[in-house]
Amino acid sequence: MSDIGSIFSPTDLLLMVLIACAPGTLLGTAIGAWVYPRHRITGGLVGFIAGFAVSFGAWAAYFAVVK
Image (cartoon, rainbow, N blue to C red; front, side, top):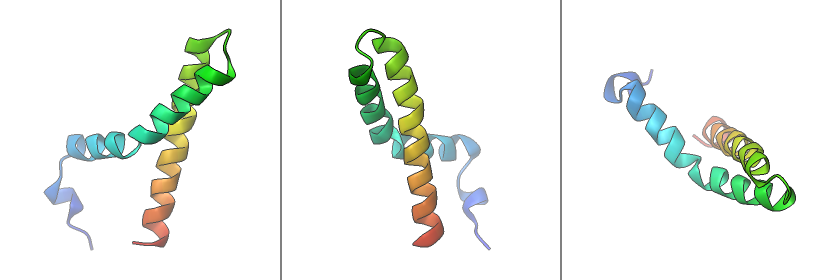
């Protein structure tokens, strides 16, 4: 059984997730803005969401398989 709930508050866990997914969100934003040059803000937002989802999925898979 894990003690992670008693060590970190929900705010701490959310901050760790956001920091861990930051590279994916930045890369997704850049790629989204580059792919949709006429709608850079919309493309960047879609890329941001996609980058976060891919990063979060990659971290979840890593912890499920390796840890």
